[in-house]
Amino acid sequence: MNVQTAKKLKGSVYENVLRQFDRAADLIKLDDGVRKILRTTKNEIIVHFPVRMDDGRVEVFTGYRVQHNDILGPFKGGLRFHPAVDIDEVRSLATWMTWKSAIVNIPFGGAKGGIQMDPSKYSIKEIERITRRFTFALGFNIGPEYDIPAPDVNTNPQIMAWILDTYLSTVAPGDRQRSTHVVTGKPLESGGSIGRDKATGQGVVFCIEEWAKEKNFDLSKATYIVQGFGNVGSWTAKLLKRLGAKLLAVEDVTGIIHDPKGIDPEVLAEFVAEKKGIRGFPGAKEIDHDTFLQTEADIFIPAALENQITAETAPKLKVKLVAEGANGPTDTDGDAVLQEKKIDVIPDVLCNSGGVIVSYFEWLQNKRSEFWELEEVDYKLRKKITTAYQKVADVRNTLKTDPRTAALMVGLLNLDKSYKLRGIYP
Ligand code: GLU
Image (cartoon, rainbow, N blue to C red; front, top):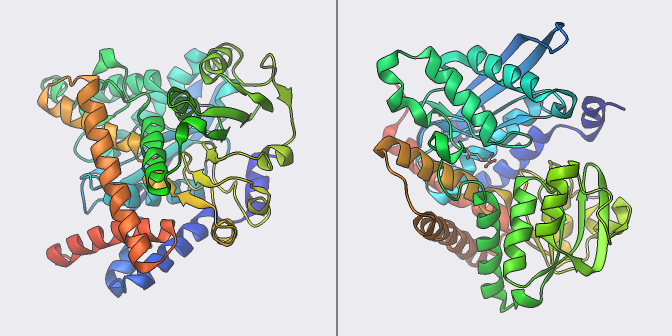
């Protein structure tokens, strides 16, 4: 079964987003007009563009950019290259970006984009041409003060550098140097920010540390399992290791590995860089998906794709905390099971916001022609994300609501205030 058929069977992710939204909107008695606006995306751009392959053939690709909302600032969000990319997914991801920036209080709106493709099937030269032609097709639908892409699943700093270079080639020569903030997550040498690479994982770990404080839990004795070993999964694992926690099992697209003695995430990351997946990691045992889900551990970090924790899979989990590195890993049925089982959740829109927070720092540095030190980036990231964590915890405790709804309430109140002050034109 191909990825798109499998997805259709699972149902719409966007419907899940709307269910999450309505729950929080009901609780804050969100104004009807604002509710209508936020339930809808603002712009949806779909482009079909041709690219010449290494063997001379031409292939036509489909790319997306959905801009959900920009009341709090320019549209912002990543670009993913994956066979599962479609309008329903990009809409959902764009909407989550709006909530995310509103919750952590950074002046951005929400957007997301991507290309429906399997990048492992293309050469690096082909990926470069696909990226450049996609950027060209998007044209002035992106811009440094308008809509700012960033890395996401299967995209990285090199791809951001190609987007930067292509975009700058299309603006007037005199405007180029002041347009480098058209994309974030760039390599350091092309105007990137120190600390952006690990930022999402770092944010996940700062959130887990807050949770541990709240629960009086000793992280140096913690065990954890990770789904997805890309940028977010691998950085989260490496940073948790520094706190003394032990990685018991990892799942990615190539396989699932388990080692009760602990897997060293640094060594695994080196292995993955070479072999392009975790399969065959020496010393670890191969296990199946169900056994992975049933691994007894303190923390589960989903850091892959949407809809992984559902009515079917959530009952299998034997953890105390789900820290969502991925976007949308839990659907509303899965959430209900987690609550029943008293498994804590740090919801995606808070937990993985470290990436966009440091993207904001990169954007600011570019605008001011500055380069900050790592200590400054880490300090400011910790401050932003722990402030948001506390706000969400306050709402959760005061209203005795679930953490996802509490997080959305914090974000929605922020957006609602802005709409009330600005009103609707004309
Ligand atoms: N793709 C990341 C996310 O889902 C980062 C977005 C950004 O930095 O703009 O949050």
